[in-house]
Length: 340
Image (cartoon, rainbow, N blue to C red; front, side, top):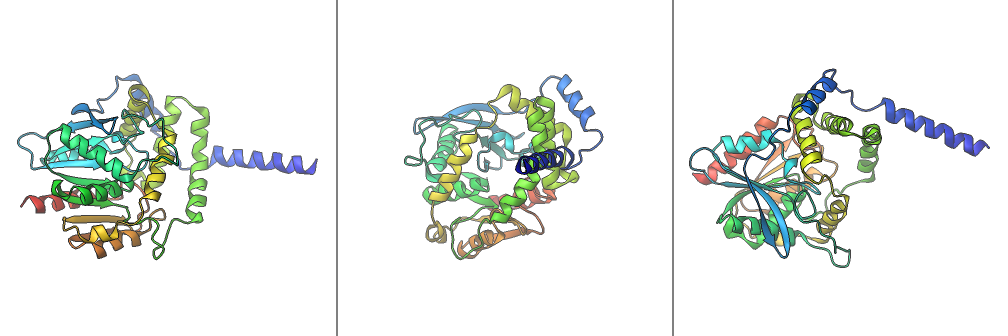
C-alpha cells in the first residue's frame, strides 16, 4: 500500500509540475491566437513551388524571387526533422529583400516531400543522399550554383554537398553544426542536456495533452519563449505558421527524427575532405550550445582553409538565435563578399 501511495503522490506532483510550471505566456497570447484563428490562413508560401525527383523520391521546394535581377541564389537547409516552414519568415525575407533568390525545401521524411516508408537501420539513407536531394532541386530549377545556408544537421548536409559538388557552391554558411559529430577529442552531447531538455519540455506537455489548434499554437509559442525570450517572439507569426502546418500540410513525422539522427551518426568524419575545400565559409555557433558544443564549430574554422567564425555569446542550440537581425546581416555580408 505504501508503494502505491508513493506512486500516487509522485503522479500528482508531476501533474502539478506539468500544469503549473513552464514559461509564462504574455497576457495578450489568447487574444492574438483567437484573432488569427478567425481569419483566413496567412500565405506562408509566397513563391513558386514544385517537386524535384531525387533517387525515386519527390522533394518539395519553394522558390522565392526578389524584385529585379537576383544577386545570387540562397539555398536554405533546415535542421533535423525540420521542413521548409521551420525557417522564420523574417529570416527568409531578409535575403529576398537583400536581392537574393531564395530556395527552401522539405527534407525527405518531412513536410510535403516523400516520407521514406522502407527505411531501416540496416538500410538507412545517408547525409550524402540528403545532399543529393538538394542537388536535384538546383537541377530542377536550372540553378548552376548557390550560397548554401545550413542549420545544425542542415549544415552537415551542406558540407556533404560542398565536398561532392564544390563547383556548385558559391559560399557556405554553417550554423551550429559539426564536421564530425563523433569526434572523440571534442565535447559531445551529454546526459545533462537530455535531463535539462526533459525538464524544459515536461511543462509543455499540458498543451499537447489538451490538444486542439489553440493549445498546439501555445505549445510552439512557449517553446519559442523558452529558447529565445520575448524579444524574438512574434505570437501572431507563430500562430499563422502552426495553423498553416496543421491545416495545409502533414505536420511532424516522428520517424524522420530517427532517420535523420541515424544519417548524422553514420556519416563519420568529414575533416580530411573539408581541409581540401577552399570555399568561403562562415561558421556561426552559440558558445552555450549543449547539443553540438561550440568546439565543433571552432574545429571547422581551424581545419577549413577559407573559413571564419562568428560566436554568439551565451546562445544555446536554438533558432532563431538572439539578435537575429545581426545574424542575418552577418550572413548577407558574407554572401556579398563573394559577389564582389
